[in-house]
Amino acid sequence: MTESPQKRTRSRYFGRSRLLIVLSVLRIVASLTLLACVWFVIDVFQQRDRTSAAIALGLIILFGALRVFIFTQARHLRCPLCHGTILHSNAAHKHKHAMRIPVIGHGWAVIINALIRGKFRCMYCGTSFRTKK
Ligand SMILES: [Zn+2]
Image (cartoon, rainbow, N blue to C red; front, top):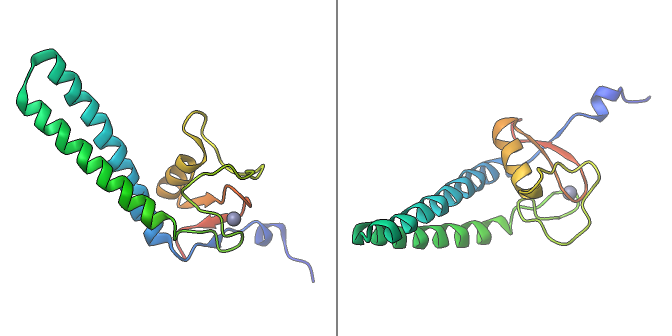
């Protein structure tokens, strides 16, 4: 008995979807924090405002704390098939079907697709996963 093409291409459920979604949102928050920090640093140089300097310092500390938390938690977020890290891109060869967004890369493609479409592909083995059952 052969499988229909639709059944073969159906995405697998990713068991750690909740952690993936939380880390994806935190990574976006961290990036926005860095952008806000840059904005306040520019404000410091333009207006010599100490309040902006304090806010910029607070934002860079928040950014660092978020990145450390994301890094330590994302190490546990691995593809169940190839054991590649889902959110961290490394020097390993990427699959030809892996989603990639020019300039921002494979990791951000996973984040954006998981949050918006509820589906993503492992960048190393190309397996399609869905975040909902
Ligand atoms: Zn994989």
